[in-house]
Image (cartoon, rainbow, N blue to C red; front, side, top):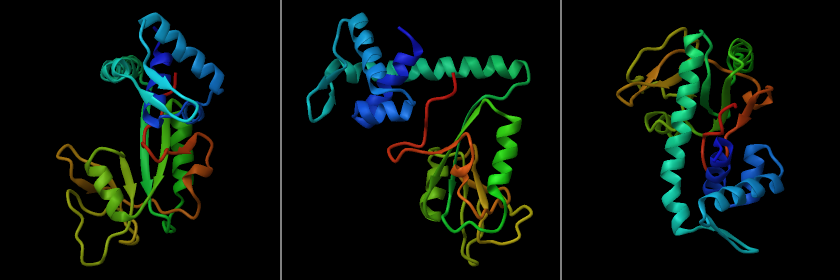
Length: 210
């Protein structure tokens, strides 16, 4: 059993499609299907029921998912801790932005960040301010750049170097509240940068670098 096989299984389970799972994992569908089938052969059970029109989890597949997720999280955490011991930063960061973010060069900031931390994967999600703030509090995204009305006071922090209240950057806090940490406006989508990609609709996470 290989970690990449587990990633493929989770991608299929999340998207309920071998085609979309292959796109998410950046592999050809035949390769992903072969690896999933090989894992099923090793386990001696079918994880997915396939027809020409749909894909569904079997009972065995549903039982397999929690352990597969936990195994991947443990492996990724071990890799990150080993890298951190040498001063290298690894992991995944998901950012949220409103479409009208226009005051600062967010692509430039992300370009510098990716240059300094090449082993950190970055995904981007666009939405309205209320939805992004809720996503930060729920732990679905790590940081959001959004707008606040003049009558709304940021919770969990105070504006830092904010040239305008229209686009504070909020990050998750230990208590789950959003905290204001500054502003990163931009004139372009962050997904125009190499290494920064849009998060899938079904989830804001993507497979970590291997």
